[in-house]
Length: 143
Image 1 (tube, rainbow, N blue to C red):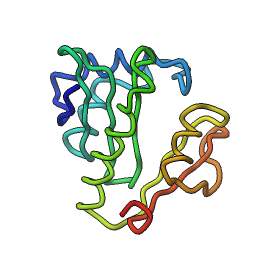
Image 2 (image 1 turned 180 degrees about the vertical axis):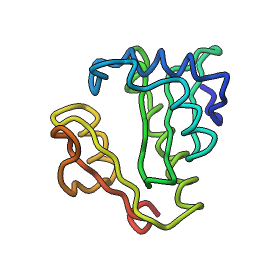
Image 3 (image 1 turned 45 degrees about the horizontal axis):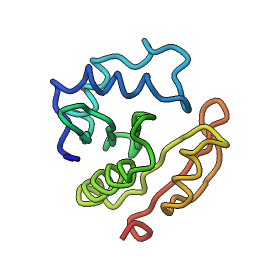
Image 4 (image 1 turned 120 degrees about the horizontal axis):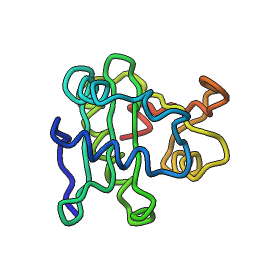
């Protein structure tokens, strides 16, 4: 497994992972464009990927403008291998070096993602969007 910074050249493979997930699926995959991904990894924040045998199997993206986790996804064929946990660590370590502002995310209720965030120290602070659970991480809780 190789973890590294996401590059513009990775976007097509990132989209494959994003659209392969079975939870937190997009109602319309066209809602998240390649241009959106490029903006988030080059202008608004930063992204990371996990590669196995040159195949991108997971990615994470944090948005400094909105203090938001924009994405953290692992291809279903590669889950339960610690990939999500390592991507989260890279992302939050970097985020809290940039700012001490709280960071938030939303995820569908009653999913493995919701359980993952609870187990890794995120605190539920309400709801977001169309019934998503809204979580927050503070600098103090991350360190």
